[in-house]
Length: 175
Picture (cartoon, rainbow, N blue to C red):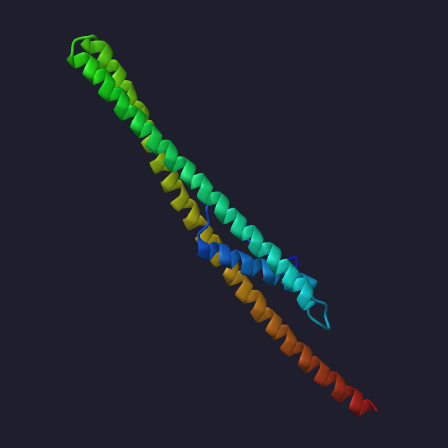
């Protein structure tokens, strides 16, 4: 049965709720794969596995935060650089030290670079929300499958009890 239970793979920048759900599913997978027919998994083994999974989730969250800070810093530095460029060359044009065409081309290029970086930033935000929606749908499917597996396990346990009772009755009647 452990082959049927699959934990989804987290993609870029999952939400805290998605991380928590992932850790819970991983722990459930550990329990399912580590138990025997007669007994469950050792608490110490489960505790060690839980500690590792939680540490991994926290480390991934911190790494994602650092990457987001780098994108924000890049946007701010590009914005500052574009403003300084436009200001410098605009001043040079206004005091007639540079021709209008050269100043206009340089200011236009600075604006295009700023527009490109801002566009990339917006694209990243759109892409993250698209991936988050995709992850939510995948998690919903996994939760649905997980509920079905639990229901089937309960039905199998009930059927097992019924069969054991029938065996006892048959053994009692034959004996």
